[in-house]
Length: 256
Length: 231
Image 1: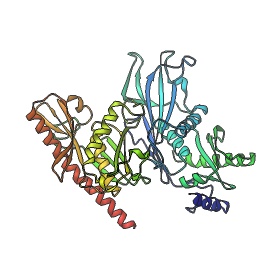
Image 2 (image 1 turned 30 degrees about the horizontal axis):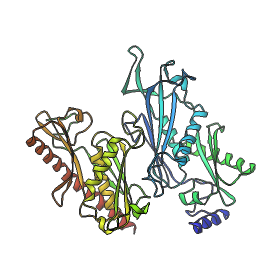
Image 3 (image 1 turned 120 degrees about the horizontal axis):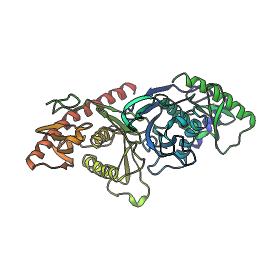
């Protein structure tokens, strides 16, 4: 593994990658919309061999007391032991919690969902939006795959019918869509050697020393950032990460 | 007799089986029985931690059954439940007889079963997927295990209950069957029925298992043909 990390790092320093891609090039991205009909919305995203399913479930619950007129957004991610030999079953660990929170932050802070419109009765009943990420096969770049799948799932989610007269909710009858604004797309830039690389494979991730996830809106504004890894980044590198994230984010957005 | 989804009494839901769906796993399979979709992945035989759990004369078979949170109409809380833990146990016991564990002493074979969509019959779909995934991993096996459930609605014995039928039936009997030995490795029932009726329900389930067995073999043949072509 140390030898392979060295090898990948040397290649990156020479602007090369194991699979022949450019440093700023994604693998093939495939999106399947609503593969899970039991969920209100779902999407399966494959980036190369990375395979992620996101399901959006809607339920009715009690709002938080400090925001009585707003719906609730809950994100969760499962790094299923099925998806990689190194993952073990058990309660969510650091990595899966970070993944869920980064996906959550982009959606929450860009105000992609109009939470006020998810209020049914102030202080009593609101819609709860559960975004569950299930990793099926892990070959790197889970954050981008998950956040992209979450965006696709939200975009295609259908609201269960709420009858205002009887105050009853019919989960079977689906009417309308979620009140959505522009959805943010997260693109993570990894530092390998002295170079910046997007969409790493698992092996490339192992060789990287730092990463920066930037969620961008359609107009190029930034909605959320997360830095990971131990290597510090210079302001010039961060600027370059922003540029790459906006650009690749635009390419991805065209697919949904 | 016509059923809610238009099937006849002894008819399975449309069954699709595909081997080799998780590239990282040593073996994997996806089984769709109507709207129920199970994915199984096998890792191993591999080193077992901690060492005191190792068996000196055979491998340990571990099965982990899990429903993903968005698989049902009402969200499932992630993490093990009493129900899922019981299913892990009966699934392991249904499979253990056909896997040649004595060939892999001191190691572990991990079988992960994820139900990505649930519409009745998840444990049977899970066993079907796990069995194909084990074979796909190239692990020595005496046979495949096929599984199906049956029940009785009114006077009719019905195969492979789906959706609301689980509530209508007098009993729900999941069966796992080893065709080569003509033996049953999983049998559960809930309901209330005289013994002779239960026997007929089991017969009905075995008929379904035999059909699934053919589909499992077909999926593996397809997979090997692919592997052969790419090698």
